[in-house]
Image (cartoon, rainbow, N blue to C red; front, side, top):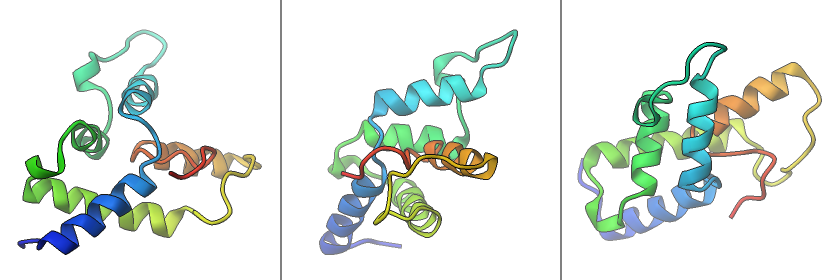
Length: 117
């Protein structure tokens, strides 16, 4: 599925609007999320496949994006937009479900407690 320049610009802007964590913050989160009491994964092995892909996209220029990158960017924008209330964040966490939701979104590079860019 080819993306024209206007669609690419809109997707790039939407992606960087919903992904409000820096690449360093996301890399740190992916390592912490995967660590357990005895082991911590190697930095390049930490995180979910989508989380690692988001991290790779954050380190690319727009001109270097692949079709697979665009697919992941669309998925992240759709997921964060549907799960996060971007207009009313940040709000303090209230329940265990809020914590799970926050951690799930952080794996995609969106921290609900951080202001959206």
